[in-house]
Length: 397
Image (cartoon, rainbow, N blue to C red; front, side, top):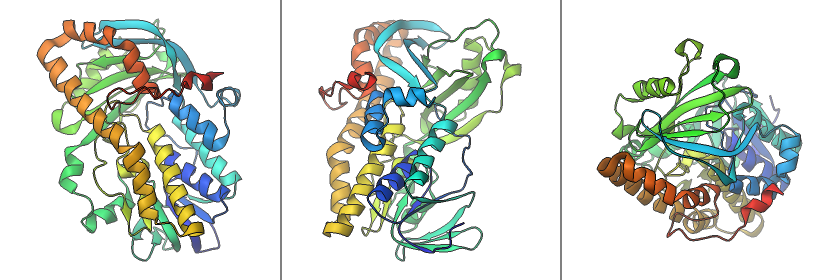
């Protein structure tokens, strides 16, 4: 436990977004405290896909390369093969992509990034719940009665954010709108030694098991991550049954399964102002920054952390308006993609599958295979499918 009670910035949440914000701000010379309710390393629910745009950001912020991450065993599993199925294991597409699927174990990955923040001078309190946050006074009180104050607070504490709860109380977030766009993710973890003769070497994405979402089987080195995610209001009461159906499709013995884990997923919840009086900023899942088509949040967690940290630093050093800086970057570089992805989601899940079922879907997916991979990797924007010309495959060199 720290002996100080005052900081330049307090970051609530030490996951990917929080660790990245803490790392950047500490590197810029600010006095930063990260508080997380868990002790690291800890289990974290997530499919764990690292896209090429995320690798690019890891290099930009941390100086880590594809090679260095492999050498340090941060990247758990890599394959260029993948499969897309429809409902009860009818294969739509099984092929090899030039864009690799790269997986991390979030227990290892998150601990790695938090340690990066510690190594550069960020103070970290682990295993303490944040009991309350005062947005006006910029104070944070812990469950043990300790209080801290700062010039700025960053809320990086996930979809169930304590910091965003204060935004709710001040009427800055519509609870109705938040719940309208909220999704759920369910996951189970299966040890490879328990899957019998099945040799799962490539990821499988399954459509049609849930509405407005998909199921997955992601291979790791020592385990399989099996799960599904979808919009709550389209799947009332169906998540658990759909997950059981998916496990059956994979021919996995249910006796080998561990506990089923569930977590909320922001799935279009970004339409509110994620800042308060230039003092408190929300990033990552806490601000609803998750891809509104694929549900991927690692990249946006890091990217919004970078925007928030830069805005705070510029405010301190050049007196630049923090809200204008943070919101300008979001409106310019984040919101357009999220809004376009929501439109694609409506067309993809509401029109294609409901109207034409599997035959047209198979044709459509095969015809748009390269486009889908470019959208996932970050080479192409969801807005008008504009090519970004980033040549992200260079990050693999």
